[in-house]
Length: 117
Length: 115
Image (cartoon, rainbow over all chains, first blue to last red):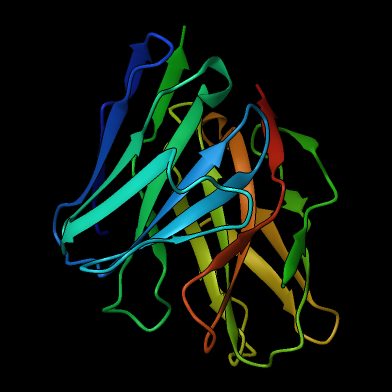
């Protein structure tokens, strides 16, 4: 199946700093990528939809100035958590939709665990 | 918005036995896709099986099969001959065939496989 790679898998940062997470589709072009946040033992919460070459679409309640999303190419989307605080600590997962198939299934990255001290 | 409900937060099964995970959804659409994803402790979500709503035949992938009841809006996952590696969180997901890219996920079922 298609491969989505996410980096870094773990990151620890100090409060007030910014952290960038990369999501790459390795063997297909993804015009749309999705960023999710997952709390322990809970489901995935969609944060935003990232569209190549245009602004991301954020879900209600997600601060677009705190969670900056850039989708500069068909294979790369980045999520930057700006001025991170301990409450931003979470597991962040990216996914890309494979538009070549008829079901448009999602392929997920490995996830990034962010810990803000 | 569509909702996906998984009423079993936790399930357990003996190794080599069969287990069924439940999923119901709410939609007014007639054309859509349903998925079961597995999230093992490594945390990467993996597609287990998918079903197109226009297909009456239930999808099957080796030991995994679904019971798709469109009228009842039910989409259960059956795992046969359970293996230790099947232990994971399982998420049911819905995607419209016509109204955009968004996936709707259930709250997940944690499956434990007992040796």
